[in-house]
Image (cartoon, rainbow, N blue to C red; front, side, top):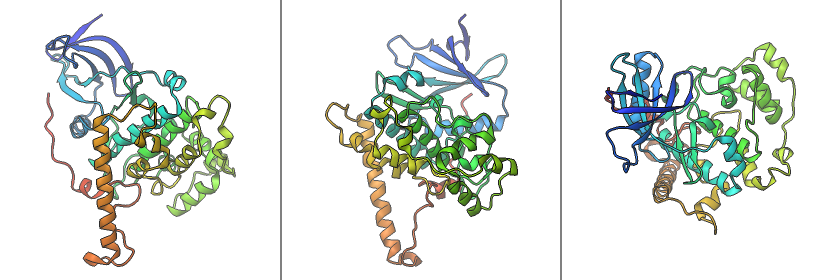
Amino acid sequence: MARTCGKDQYEVIKQLGKGKYGEVYEGINLRLTARDKDRVCVIKVMRPVKEHRLRREVKILQHVSGGPNIVRLLDVVRDPETKTPSFVFSFVDAMPFKELQAAVTDLDVRYYIFQLFIALDYCHSRGIMHRDVKPGNVLIDHAKRELKLIDWGLADFYQPGKEYPVRVATRFYKGPELLVDIKDYTYSLDVWGVGCMLAALVFKKPVFFRGEDEFDQLVKVVRVLGTDGLYEYCEKYGVELDPRLAQLCGYRPRVAWRKFVTGDNSHLTSPEAFDLLDRLLKYDHHERLTCQEALQHAYFDPVREGLPGFKPLPEPMVQMLAELDARRRQQQREQEVGDDGADGNGPGQSRGPPRGRGPAATAAAVGPKEAVVVA
């Protein structure tokens, strides 16, 4: 049964889903006509939550809304009786992940993962970690070939050296840093999530690392990536594994990606895909590719070059690529200056941000400007 919220401006039509922090509905903005593209919208009704958490989510949404491939925040309203806050977003006619897997081609996978990296590079450049990258938070309208990154409830502003809670992300997409209790993680946590999604798409698995609990999740990872890298990672960062977890992991060799190739998924696999997976799914969070680096990977050559029969990039994405390329050239120039010993840097010293920490590490330490909550 339809109901209204936000001073009768929005009518709720049907429930689309629910999560730990809220319920999501398809709705209609009654103040707009049928011709207005935002008349049909998505309303996220929040469950009771601490005010500071709500303010952080609103601030983050206002920082990223309107960015490439990121869902647009249209309004923030409160129920006049319960004062429960609701977020109003633009509507995306998304295809369920299982159906998408059955429909996509090799070029489709490259295209959508490329778009996801565009979205994450933007939010990282704004000093924000998403911290819950998974298929449920990546809406894809396959008919329009559009992707939108959603749900910023677990996102936070990154500050170098700051310790963050490890109880973030969804279990199947948790990076090893969370599973071994490393709290000073970085933007590269999101990169791990993309790697898990890419593996699921390429190998046509609903979930690539499916653990029954936190311990078993790490076990599922080491069954593919092997234990040598895990133990080196723990030794490097002074992590002592729980004895029960160490026993469960035992010793396992790394499994080659080609072992997961079947007659059903071979058309989606390639040496470039395997190489990209190697560079995204690294134990060491500082050794994973940044989003900028990933966008330059050979796996995405067909996307950038626009192969015959492949839909050209939308104009906003062409512009974003140009900006990314300009930023990369600027960083290279700064690196060359640093290598020449300018500004007090000695030869070989890099002036850029640490690997995996993104371009906004320094800016994020200062903190973004305060945002005003619309209520």
